[in-house]
Amino acid sequence: MTTRLIGALIMVHGDNEGLVIPPRVAPIQICIVPVMQKKEGVLDKAYELRDRLAKDFRVKVDDSDKTPGFKFAEAEMRGYPIRVEIGPKETEVALEDLETKAAEILETMQKEMLERARAHRDSHTYVAHNMEEFEQIFNEKSGFVKAMWCGCQECEDKIKEKLAVTSRCMPFEQEQIADTCVCCGKPAKKMVYWGR
Image 1: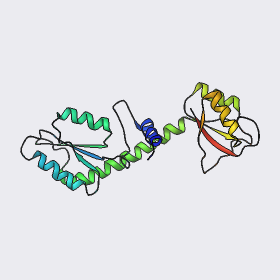
Image 2 (image 1 turned 90 degrees about the vertical axis):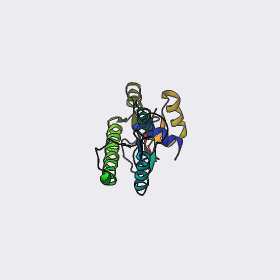
Image 3 (image 1 turned 120 degrees about the vertical axis):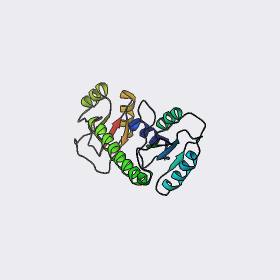
């Protein structure tokens, strides 16, 4: 995994509370937080639960001496998809149903995050047929612009110098937006996603 990919993940899914990591790539999928962990049996049950869940998920028990509130905030900041609170009075989900419920939650979360990211990307992707449209979009909006390119480095350098915009992606599935390069007007070779 590259730092650019990590940065993109944070930009797409992060919020003001901390990281939001898609379940399939999250290093820790479930964080078990023992509540009143000094009471007899609470930590033992947390470890037992961890060992059970670790067969199907990436799991951590936060057995630090910090307060439960601090642990909850830290779990949210670190982007753990699921936080399981276990203690003498916690009874919302029966322990025997936990694997099934966790799998359902993670799958739903993964699908919803992907749909939300695609919708955001699509609503912030524009099309430019010429340099005038290209400049106008980047001066007025944020996001990506699909435009044709001749393949010459000079054109990319000119766009970068003039607008601080660079090529981001040349998709395998090409679209024919125009016949000419958005920059120089020569015959275009590829459709490119551009971004600032």
